Image 1: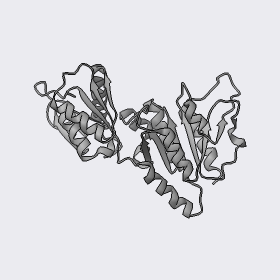
Image 2: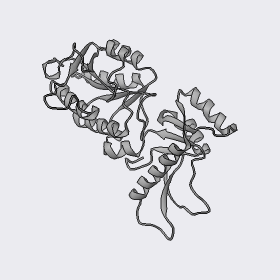
Image 3: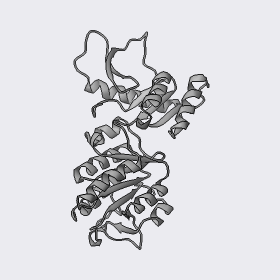
Image 4: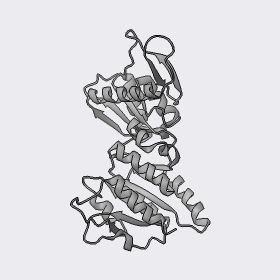
Amino acid sequence: MSSSGARYVYGKNSVKAMIETHPNRVFKIFIAEFLKPDKRIQAIREVASEHGIPVLMVPRQKLDHMLSHQLGHQQAQAAKPAGPGPKVVSVNAIGERTLIQATEEEPLTHQGIVASVAPKALLDLAALLKICEVKKAEGKHPRMLILDGVTDSRNFGAILRVADAAGIDGVVIPKHHSAGFGPGVSKTASGAEEIVHIAVVSNLNQAITKIKDAGFWIAGAANDPKAVDYYKQDYQMPIALVMGSEGEGLAALVQKNCDFLVKIPMHGSVDSLNVASATAVLLFEVVKHD
């Protein structure tokens, strides 16, 4: 699917088929609150549980917004209209894009369920570590980025763009407390979400332990008395940089699991950069030492 393609699959049958055929691309499932349960919804919950896919209950208005956002994004990308009536893009369960005619008699509806879908197959941590092993075998230091609680789609998209520009070997995100993949991510990533290796993990702290066991040093970005100015730190080693959420920073246990902490000194009136800008500063400092 191209970077301009859809990032949401909606409707009970389409969501169920997507999980069954491409479970590693399904990031999260959103179900409308107070939705009357039926056999299809129950089946979706069961198959999602089998694959460890988070299911979130949200207001129906959120699903309405996701659907309208996606259709508006796709209309902007579509070619010239074919015949009367608005042209929209429908995405089937395996990501194929089809032009259809929307009419008042046949409105597009999410049926109370939407799946957030990755633009490509996501990796597990073991697969990403294998990619890094190849770089080690070449005598180079692999570089990894770990995101802890980055839930804003624009920040996530911008971070992926930075990761691609800096040549990072992969990005690790948790299944929960992450932005997911929607048109907002696609717009700000400018295609980087198709290129950057992205691994999804169920437990971030367990993942950090495995990354350490693979020979990486864990550098956490934090405004902490123990943190050193980022440009004074030695990065001549396999590094995994951990960035926290803009509001809360690193979770306490994540920060405790870091081998060392770095910070960006602020010399103006603001006390911090947004997480995407901070990631850019730190990543390019890390890769400068290759």
